[in-house]
Length: 161
Image (cartoon, rainbow, N blue to C red; front, top):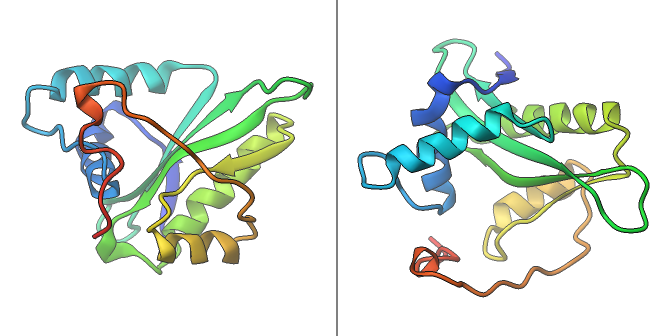
């Protein structure tokens, strides 16, 4: 059965944090940064310029995917751009439609907000994800450059697995 996509809730925090760790973000569950990270997540859910969605396995009810999207102003565009900072489906649930369902819902929401484009970033070593994005109609248009500015970035970007 196809996964169910719904708005993320505060109760989804442990599953979302675990998925973000799987994506290569810091694993905060059970660590000293968990409370602060959970608070950031809860604040994100309340913002008017963001979306946070989960994909749920229709049989087990488990959260198997997560996406967050922000609506941001870009100079010389009169409507917002939809930007996806994170899109992750658990390794054991891939290729079953969760990623496509999350991306499709983001596209719908971006169109409702009259966004001029939907964009996302992906680590250069995520070849399987890149193939998925191309299959879903996204084009590889840019490069992303970054420099870490704090100790928190010491393991960023994550190393290829």
